[in-house]
Image (tube, rainbow, N blue to C red; front, side):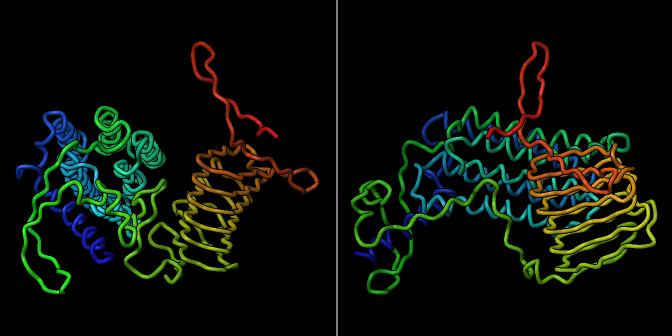
Length: 429
């Protein structure tokens, strides 16, 4: 009986795959009347509208942006195929659903992996905006609240889309239009979900499955057979059948919030060789582990520093420089003289920053644990933070000691009759 239960499960998976190609009567997407066809047509409007506009503008920009857009186009194609299956099939068992979701999940991973492989791209902000928000396509597994999930992923891209706008608003309108078209994709997807999939992916109410398959019979012989799987033979329709033999294992949901990073195709990041070099105008400091004496000298005003995936290390930057970025660093220490632009802390954990001279702006984004030691000359520095916690600013006293002040993490917003007014609040208790 255990072998029979296993065979039935395998047949269900095969049924799910074939339904993606052939629905009732041999034409997917036409079952259950016009209401089902409507959500396919509505999705196609997103594809032919904002997605097509985003792709066209990506073609004008070219390079990595275009390659990324081609991956996004494929991701939406995979999502459409899933919607076609749903329009002609009843909701399957978890095992079958996991299999049906795999093409979309793999497409998301491909988009995210491309960003990780092209961190030196001149359009890194474009790639990051797409990579941070593409998990929104995982809404199909986010019942009963798929729409808020898409909104959350759209907001995750805002940090990078704002950087694109800031960089190109006075230089190239194509990039500005690119941002507008890309953001509109997720806005329209939210409207689409509200109308057609309010509490989760909508499945057909009826389905007829008649397939021809080849399988290993109980005597370990291959033979062709025509199989009709009736409702009382499906494990998701007949609980008693599911209980026979060993229980059918349900797979984990392929999407989480935030979604897991894709498995790298190369060796794990910890095995990558450390990098410490000047590449054009960019100082690259990458993959250092336990390096306590990293020093950048002979700097120029036009140069920038980019430190990536450094752990338990310290970096000192002497002289005046344009900007400094710490990305995906842990237990990292940064000491610098003067920065004329901005110091950015992104996706870091437990980092300490010390300003010796001046800096106009320090940005802290998606970071847990950040201590900033200001100098007397940098007390007018602006601290901009988003989606971060455990941030503290240390201000120097006359005796050379520092006063530690926490950056607010909790806020209160009220309507004053004309506008929203937001103020920081103390955490109760």
